[in-house]
Every structure is written in structure tokens, then in C-alpha cells.
Image (cartoon, rainbow, N blue to C red; front, side, top):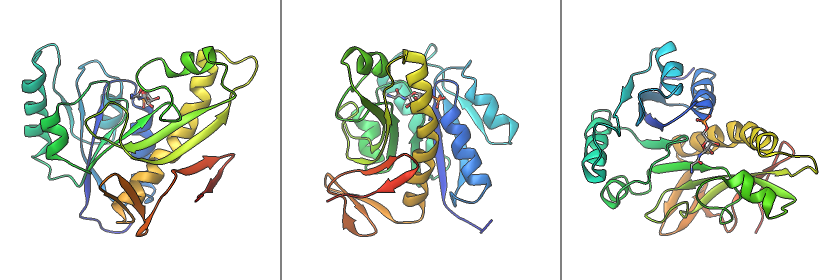
Length: 223
Ligand code: GAR
């Protein structure tokens, strides 16, 4: 593994399978950065154990203790600023962030959302895709702005919706692809290949007119 001075902080709320994919990508050298800390808003998030197991700082800022939204985000900022991270990675972090937080880390917060944005912003995306009779569904990696699930999209993974899919089988098929595209996008950022300029995504200095597409184990770019 090459020596790196870059670092990321990962925010979680739950099981942390995306966090695990990121830990694995750091360990195998595909993400050339250190995970400085994993922060959870819930003390019982199983993802915390994934961090502890490999010696990463696992920090809890409990939303039951700090119930005020501004105060919570101020505590989050205080914690994050200890690490001087290059990128803040939301990996199943189920909270809406305040404008103050988003402004502070402008263009440096990335999220994964389980739908083909702009479709199905918000919760219960798999159920809603099934109810809408979609034949394709997926996940999107995007930079975070003040609107919910609305920032510019870097890459999407697309999967077929099968006739006998349940919410669970569809979620599992999407999640498997999340574990591929999220580390990929983070690696692009860390390697200095990915930037945001106004509302545009630049990859290798060229504007991405449409998100990169990961489908059937292939990456494609379209005009
Ligand atoms: C993932 O499916 C992620 O896309 C989703 O939460 C799950 C977290 O799983 N995020 C959102 O819905 C954010 N709006 P994980 O804890 O196993 O990574």
C-alpha cells in the first residue's frame, strides 16, 4: 500500500455494510486514504463494531442526548474538525444535516442513496420502486447540498427489478452494487480525479453530463 496523507471521516447510523466496503477498499489499497474516524448518531449502530475491530476511532454523538438539530451538528463539526478530513462520507447516515454543516464542508460531503436519483428521494425507496412497477432500480452516489438527496450525481448502479422481487430481495441486489460504486467514487475523489464546480461534476477535468453508469459489472460514460 502506498503512503497517503489524505483522510476521510465516515458517518453511519446502522449496519455499516457500505462502511465495511470502504474499510476493505482502504485495506486493499484501492482507496488511498486513512479512515480517521467513524461517527454514529446511534450508540447501537452495528457499524461501530466494524470500525473498532480494525482499530478505527469509533465515536458516538447520540441524537437522544443532543436533541437540538443545530447543537447536534455543532457537536458533529467539532468532532470532524479534529481530524482535518479531506472528505466526509455519509454511509447510511439517516439524518438531515443543517445548512451550517453543509456550508462548512461544501463539495466535500458525499452520500449514497438507494435509488436512481432523481427518482425516489427520501425513505422506503425499494418499496416505492416496486409499487411504481419499475423494471430498473439502483443506487446513486452524489455530493450533498442543502436539498434532500439532490446534489450532483457522480455514479449510479443499475439493476433489473425481477418479477418475483420483494422489498428485501431488491434491497439486497442494490446493496451489493452500492458496495462497488461507493468505494469507486471515493477513490476517484481521493485521487484528485473528481471535483464539483457549481453544480457540475468533473471527472478527470471533463464535465460529466450524465452520471457514470455501473451496470452488469461494466462502467460506462455517456454524453
Ligand atoms: C444503504 O442502502 C444506503 O444506500 C442507505 O442506507 C443503507 C445503509 O446500509 N442510505 C440512505 O437511505 C440514505 N438516504 P449500510 O449501513 O449497510 O451501509
